[in-house]
Every structure is written in C-alpha cells, then in structure tokens.
Length: 146
Image 1: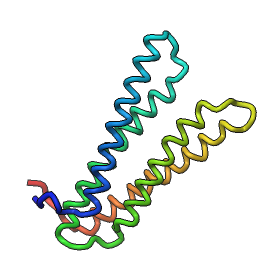
Image 2: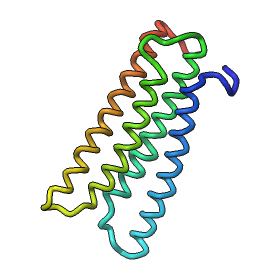
Image 3: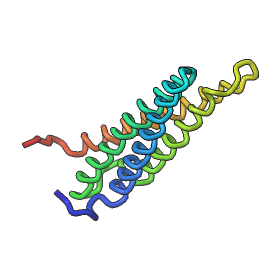
Image 4: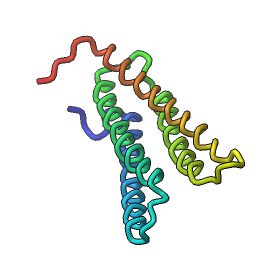
C-alpha cells in the first residue's frame, strides 16, 4: 500500500468526492427531516437524489478513484489521466445541483427541462467514470485479490 502522497491527483479527487458526499448526506438528511417535520413530501425527488447520487454514487466515484490511485502508483495507466478524472468530477458536480435546481422549477415555461440537460451531464459523468475504471482494469492484466 502506498503512503499518503501516493496516487497524487487521483487521491485528491477521491477525497473531494468523499467531502461532497458528506455534504449531500447532511443536506439530504436535513431535507428529509424537514419534510417529516412539516408533513410535506413535495421534495422527495430532491431528497432521494441528494442521497442516491450525492452520497451513494459520489461515494462510489471516490472509492473508484482511490482504487485507481493505488494502481497508478505502479506506473502510468494508459488512457487514465488526471485530466479525465477532473473532467468527470466537474461534470458530476455541476450536473447534480443543476438537476436538483431544475427539478423544482415551474412546469409549463420549459424551465423544468433544465433538469433534463443537467441529468444528461450527470449521465456523461457516470459513463466517463465507467470508462476510466474499465481502462484501469484492462491495463492491470490479471490482478488477483489476496
């Protein structure tokens, strides 16, 4: 296992994902408690997506990038660059708040379609993450867990 500095930019991005996941955890839980307190469940989409994407998926992204960082300690990974990992991070972190904000905009003026645009941004981030992880797996050949 590498030291704290190992993995460089991938570990930095992973830590950022973990911090953002904790933020969405607190926000999602507070929103859920507020909905219970006021007996109003109009914000279920916000609450659910803060927890599912903001906590669950961002936590997975952080764990995946942490794992990629460990693999990158052994040498460069073909097609897996910090630039792509940063792009993936920003797509995800712009996509989710945009999707959440768009989901509460009024229907009828077309403003609610903003959520769809940002939802697609979130989907692109997910596909890019899958690509990065797949490239890491391919570059490692036969990795055995002991």
